[in-house]
Length: 263
Ligand code: NAP
Image (cartoon, rainbow, N blue to C red; front, side, top):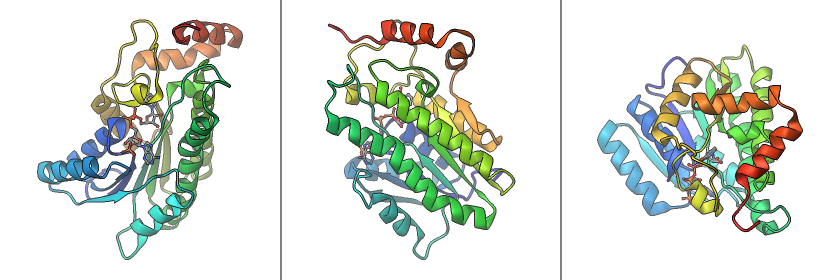
């Protein structure tokens, strides 16, 4: 794939934040879209705006990806009698925040389902037909926390570390097939993520990236054939820190920076 023009791209979690920005940027570059999330009214509004602004086809599939059969239902809905999906953006994700063990177990379970199992299931469904056609791409939205210990987001950071390792491994397996897989690792980005995760302390003087910048640079990186893209120069430096500093020191710093109010 050397351009997004005329491709058919599936974006999960397209009703907000990074997913919405990726969808808009893909449309700006001429891609037709399948957008999915749970918020029907918001998704329909975004789809209408994109159609009007960019004149591309936009299909909306309202789905709760936490439902057991959701990945298969999504695959079936996007496959029947249609053009194939050329690009899957596994973006839908949630965070959990707090002292591990005090966060509700059902929230942690839902987070692991959405951040780990769903992208893995969708990759398993969409990848083989792409390999067969000899073209396609998958972008898995991980995080800079994939590289670091993440006190107070312990399970979330681990879920993103899984997604990073998974993406890089499968990318190596499909090298030379014409299919590309990229892990996108954003740092703090201005979306609804932090509020939804209940994050009460965001760290000192964090500079939030704009989701449209994350989207634009990530889509450029994927076209360039990158398997990993860390959004933002400072974030990239942060991901390099554990390579040079003792892991214990990294974890100590992260604990101090991320400690919730009152702990
Ligand atoms: P966001 O604004 O909260 O968007 C999350 C998206 O996921 C929404 O479209 C939401 O749509 C969808 N979603 C949530 N639960 C869902 C479910 N059960 N089924 C289907 N869709 C669901 O957050 P964001 O920051 O854009 O997050 C996008 C990705 O970036 C996530 O994977 C996140 O971990 C990652 N990330 C974010 C940051 C950051 O600082 N913002 C940093 C690093 C990585 P509905 O509610 O309509 O279903």
